[in-house]
Image 1 (spheres, rainbow, N blue to C red):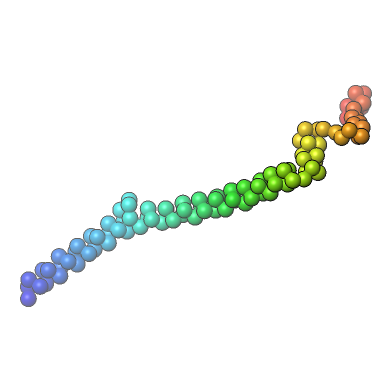
Image 2: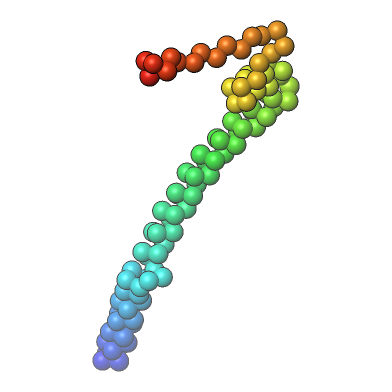
Length: 98
């Protein structure tokens, strides 16, 4: 009976040591939780980038197919004007400082 008792004590101690290593070691449970958080953050970033890419893809398709979108882009980004349009630039009076 004493051999069985010693065997149970050894096995119990071994189980406790393995559990302690699992929960307390650098590569154990804490690292697993950190990796899960990192994966969740990366997935969120991927979703944001996927949405941005979809918007850019839609803009590219719109620019390829529609002349109006290209004109709007040229007006806002490059300051271009159409052939039958007149550009007026309002310059503030130097005396008022506006």
